[in-house]
Length: 584
Image (cartoon, rainbow, N blue to C red; front, side, top):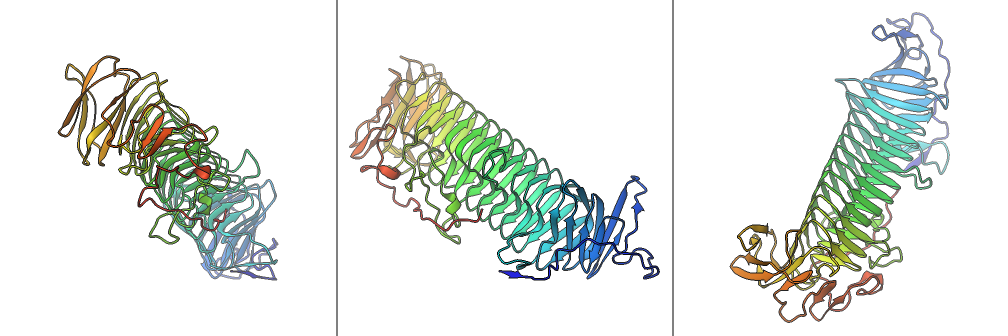
């Protein structure tokens, strides 16, 4: 609730407070007094601000006190300590002034506005002193001077740049809106931060750039967000280092233009997408542990993964974008639906009111193709794998491209669905393998192999019976060399394998449990066994009970992406519904 305050209690007007002589035992350091004090160790001049519960003492220049509001009006360094109850540090300096706030064991609360409020400055740098604990909090209701105002709305709020650094700890509780918010750029260089907030924990309009630090973020909405969608060169998030534990009611990390992660240890538990960009996601390093009610990694445009260790232990879809490029790294993901997915349009997850069933809000938001339907064939969609080690455990399709799929290198182990309504591999355009190792197991009802124009040999196997979870399969050459082997954690009745070592004309022995067969590689796609009661899965086709056939862009699915007849929605697959829009 936002109430109106007509007298501007928290927008203090800067003024000069004159020393009045002997007003206390510490002459020249009473509330409102101003005395310049030189720091003997550095030679610099700091203004010292000490909270005394319901009063505050200022020693130095550039700051004035009005009741419990300290207004800083000049560039400089300000050292804060003590405790200030229901007060405010307001920065209202010149537009080029750089203001540094050193938190030296400082606690401040405000029940009706931001505790730290940047009205105007070039930048505000908040430095936590080594070995200190510092606490900033606001209340559940804000008071504004004018009807319709909605700023400030964070415990720490600035209309200009915020820079965070230091060796101490800062705890921020945002009871009204965000925890720390900049209407410009927000940069974190170092420090330890514990932020608990009803909306976004860390938010920069133009950008969020994190170079280091330790973060424990609990957010009712997004953990980290950059929100400027009006300027192409803004609205981005960059993370190069840091340790993160993020629990989010919406997205873990969100950018509206681009999201780049090159390092750090990142642990996310989110109801909506864990890592999300309305534009591109680029990952070149870092260690990730992700549990989410929606996508592990999502980009409306392109996902590029060059390196990093990524473990997605819970997701609806693992990694999704219009274009997905995986060039390196180690990826281990589990998904309720598709493991890797290339599809057009936004994913509708901005409409997600909580992602996991059994939690508040229930079901996921429906994914759309931009025209109100679910994802279907999408122009420009592709998945390309050139390197890396990728393990997929998917209840839907293991790899699903609504365009093309290219495998040029790396190793993929895909454990696909156990039901016959999905397949280990699914593409609507061309699916080629020219390098790397592919090992895919799953059900046999919707098997789709690679295309005939692949440059690497492929073997497709239908077993005579379903193999139980944990049943090892092994492919050996004529001299007894084990070429490929696997030990799937789920039951399976089909197998797709490809390797540069599979030679034309050579005979291999395949065993799976008690079943054994000889397979001679002949042609680019070699099939062994037949699905009982169904047609074979030929190159570029998906077999299905009573259905299947070649899948080309725009074919094989109804408008809006619904499965055609013969591709029933698997029993027990999560349903989707649309929830109200999240606040951006």
